[in-house]
Length: 241
Image 1 (tube, helix red, strand yellow):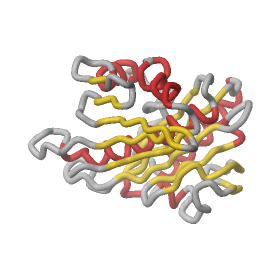
Image 2 (spheres, rainbow, N blue to C red; image 1 turned 180 degrees about the vertical axis):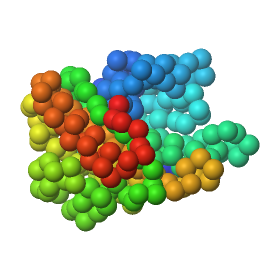
Image 3 (cartoon, one colour; image 1 turned 30 degrees about the vertical axis):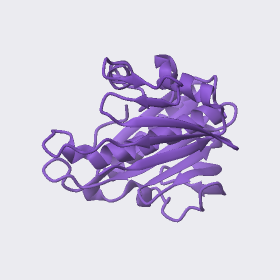
Image 4 (tube, rainbow, N blue to C red; image 1 turned 135 degrees about the vertical axis):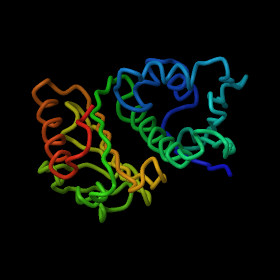
């Protein structure tokens, strides 16, 4: 089975291509800050199995998934077409996680290009087990407006936040947040994760904050609020990265 994922980015195709083909640019939207991020980027986007289309409109990454860039009136449509699943592979159980991960990363790519094309993000990331409930519900994000609409609310962390709903699906919520950037907005993504028997039997949730140009004090305040919320609501989870 293949899964098609796409976003329309208000940037031209060469700009998008640059974000896919320079490691330092990929780091502004793929994943989150971690010791292994550079190695992961190299393996996925720059290893010997990666194939660049001659016209710079397709990129086949290491696992066989394909990025396609298509100019449209409002910018560039960027799609990821999943490769077929090898049910004998050790990665078969994680296939839905990979699909949901691409959706997150496409939204982070769109945000980086449209809101902070020359910026350098800082991130906070953590995941929690599902036995203690959905992070989307616990944070008070279940009934937010539709994508593109303005919102203003008090998160479960106690933060009063506002901005626009960046994206919204059955399993994910993305919000721009004014207080997560010195200029403009940062991005908050919360995603609920499916059950994987014997590996993640209760499902789970993950949270990624993308922050821009904040001082050390503001960064630490945000990190502490989130880590306190995590430890109170999910006491068996690992601390924020």
